Length: 495
Image (cartoon, rainbow, N blue to C red; front, side, top):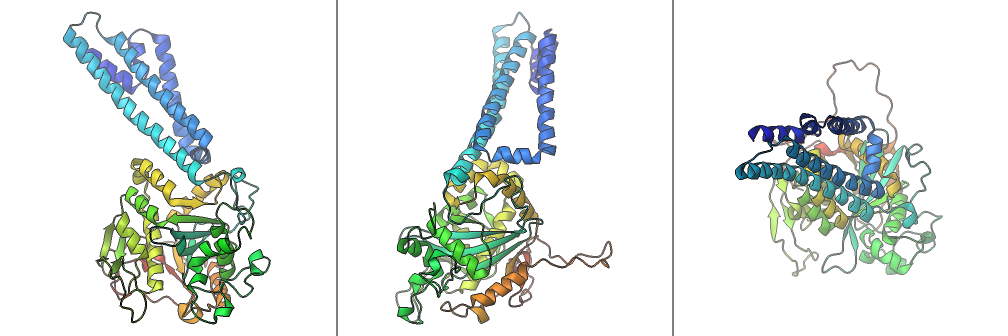
């Protein structure tokens, strides 16, 4: 009986071999050939047909077919094991022998069924995520999304792709949705090098292009001149998402997210960029995706408040923070603490908060390693459904994934808009000066000097996190750029 069990194990590892050993040579040869052929085809497609794999991964119909295929393969594999054992076991067996053989075959079938089920569930989770977050062009509405003719190569005539990143907070105690985080990622579509630009939540007079319908309502930018040159919170940048669609519904046209379209148009005009798409993150859902990733590692250079509400100078109604995130290198944060690392601001400046938000994005990109994605994909997909909203259409997702792989290994840097000069307060920012800074920062760089010799040490900063105190980083020249690997390193200092 032990010999039959061993041969049954071989038949499970090499499907069809059991039929060959049991005398059913034609069936065995067919199953072995089919198994080897499927394995070889999978390896060939995985290694040489990357685009086809990416297309499958973001096509709901193909994902459904793939799920069915995984289930069918699993069931056939189990059938082959069971039939092989029947052929290989001795004709005369004791009750104990039959029980031992059946138990072993049951374990083998279980070992096949578990990964098959996990694989099918993972594929279905991916299908659900794609269908829930990324609508097709024909079934979604956007007043600002570009029309892409070449779905295979949508960046052929787009040297830089500009994406608006929004952090929206519509939680308990909030009057509607405010976008506390507004950033623009400008990505070089050839190299993946990315420039991040943070916009301050309290900017007023956010401009609109002259050809925009909103320009006629706010020719001097989004503010109310009748109130005078004072702080106008309902005309801050973070109030535009809620207030403008309410005041001028569908001014830009039919849209699934009017607030995001308004911000794309206005932020693009403020920075001198044509913003292609937006990605909106629900800040509460952010906790779930960080937890699904297993947490993120960040360097904390000063105490960061958890909670708290500053009511203004001299106010006795301040709500003090519940606690603080303490300074330290390579701090592992769960979703709750990562959210407060990104948004905590009691007693801190807006620029320090914006830097921490950029560092949070940097940490999340670094945390999305293949091992984590494979082992926790269902949790990540479920969290992403609650987290993300976007106008990126399904049809160009393969190209986006390719671009994302470039970004992960490329340089990510921050563009300093020179706060002291261009927006010392939010009442009247110098958008023209900021446009000049942005255009200079994203302008193509001259080709490298041919005099550089092979083996010469690289001057590119390491992307690995700094785990030891390095002292204060070199100050960024106003209007310049700063590599996020340097900006997010551990250098204890006052915010």
